[in-house]
Image (cartoon, rainbow, N blue to C red):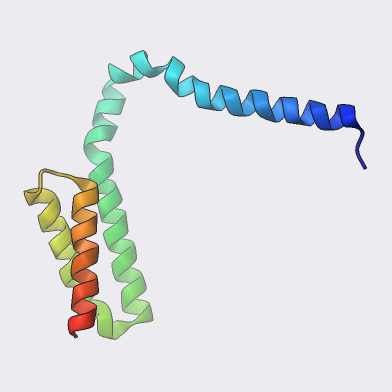
Amino acid sequence: MPETGYIAAVCATVFVITLSLRAIPFALLNWLRDSPLVKVLALWMPVGILGILAATTLQRTIHAEPTHAAAAVVAVAVTGAAHLLGGHRTLLSVGIGTGAYVLLLHAL
């Protein structure tokens, strides 16, 4: 069994590292708000996330359940349309696309 001092040193080290990693973004917040990189990331990340989600869904569905491929393709299209027509709200469009996929699976 490790000694008490060793356990305390490990806990202190973990505490300092965790606190530092959580505090750094807040310390850099003012600089990040004005950063052109953050503005570009804010513009493209939701689209990238939706693209990765769509590609993964289609790839896994086609390989695992080929009979569900049509429902997956339609759901991806519904997700894209909801994102473009719904004011680029990522959670809303993913929710609508997921709902469409579930409804199509139960309808087929």
